[in-house]
Image 1: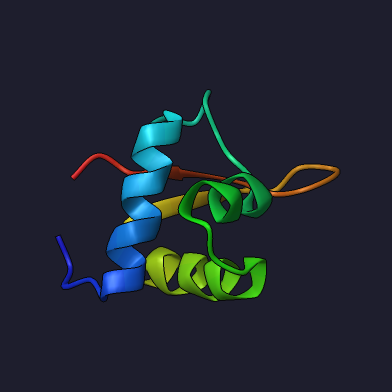
Image 2: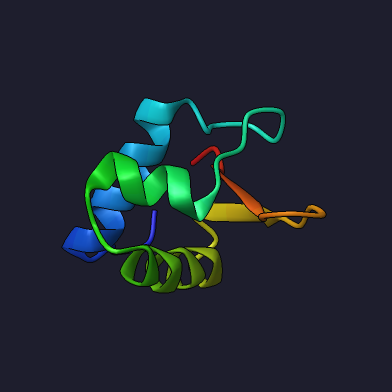
Amino acid sequence: MAELTPIEQLVVEAMRELGATKDSVIKTADDIAKKCNRPKGMVANTLVSLMQKNVIKRIAREKASGYYVLPQ
């Protein structure tokens, strides 16, 4: 797995605790921000960097996009 910053590790751990580990169980940035008790903007930026590192995947939907952790 790519080297992750502390906030990236926190977000990935929160996603795992929420069960967002496959494309049938995805969580929004709001869900993740609430779980890790961080501002949504910070979490959104972290999600982008995690996507660039191929740690998570984004699924576009009509309302909010969903995210899940890729198997490592």
